[in-house]
Amino acid sequence: MNRSFVIYPAVDIQGGHAVRLTEGDPTRETVYFDDPRDAAAHWVKLGARELHVVDLDAALGKGDNREAIRGITRRVSAEGVEIEVGGGIRDLETAYAWLDLVHRVVIGTAAITKPELVDRLLQEVGPDRVAVTVDARAGKVAVRGWTETTEVDAVDLAARAAAQGVRHLIYTDISRDGTLQGVDPAPVAEVRSAFEHVLIAGGGVATVADLEIYRDLGLDGAIVGRALYEGTVPYP
Image 1 (tube, helix red, strand yellow):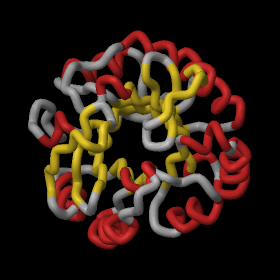
Image 2 (cartoon, rainbow, N blue to C red):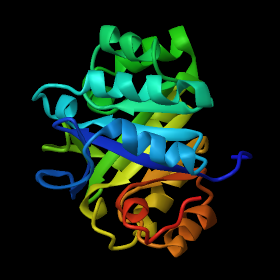
Image 3 (cartoon, helix red, strand yellow):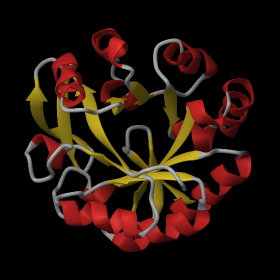
Image 4 (tube, helix red, strand yellow):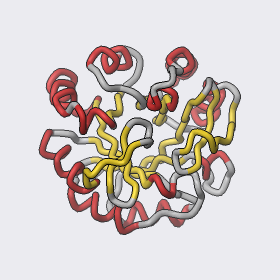
């Protein structure tokens, strides 16, 4: 809680392109960069030192964008940029393959279906290199690329992650993600109350005022996509 507030530019990759989805719907995409390496380089040139990269195809189980993400790591590796990668990381082999290339892996579906994977990674690589993402729709956690909504309560999962030893948590409000509607502070505050460690949130950020809401709630940062790409939130 004592580190500065960080804006993580989102580089979401679908079909080899840097895109943003509306409410996580893969059929409602906007392509911002044909080449994801250019998207990453753009934010790094503006001063980003932490990037949030998601392989949407891997999350949905319809292929992967590993080569594109490897290209990102090669493109910005000399800049001292920390990259966290999520999307389809549901076994130890995949997690370690990414940890050879990036700073942190983001575990979503497996945090519910294979909590032992989170335990193993925390033990073997340490809590700084593992994040759990709580992606929620109406308070319930969604999995498998947000295509399935479970009965798991978002706040309960946040508390469970803290008890496991997770020290980096990401909360996403799916219903607002990619919409520029602005953030809903109520569910974010509930998750903050359940998780006292590093908490990053996203979903609906439209203006600098939304970032101030996150700061006021005691968050450590925000993942921002469409608002950065369309310039409604300046970077840096």
